[in-house]
Length: 172
Image (tube, rainbow, N blue to C red):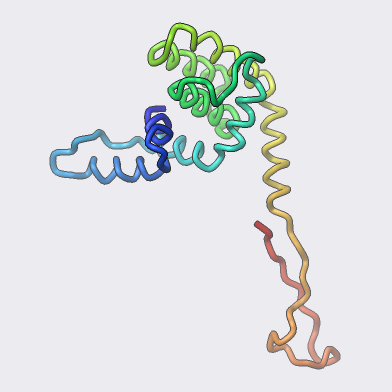
């Protein structure tokens, strides 16, 4: 959570912060603690899926709350917990919610824990549908196009002599 918070505050890539901390932790008298592998996974996951995570959080915030108007620490907490809910099925849903609320209780204002709890509970209640949406989005992003071999491929100019070759091409 603190790396996601720092990245937003400094307007830099959170993965770069992780890389810097890893490098600093390997110095003879390290000024920072080593970055745990799971922390690296969370930070990388939130960075890659930030648009999706923010879209889901915004969808499930109470009507009078807007993501961009929340304190940065609350956004960081919501982003970490929501990423775990959506993209890490190894973390029990209840655990992600409880840990998010505990982080809010420890690091944010008294008002934060209740609305973070409400948002995460709502996301948790729809987690199966949201994960299915993620799968559909990933499939849509990985469309396969069947192309015939391009002219000048070295197969010969005479179609009667050279068989047609098909190749798969992944579209971004």
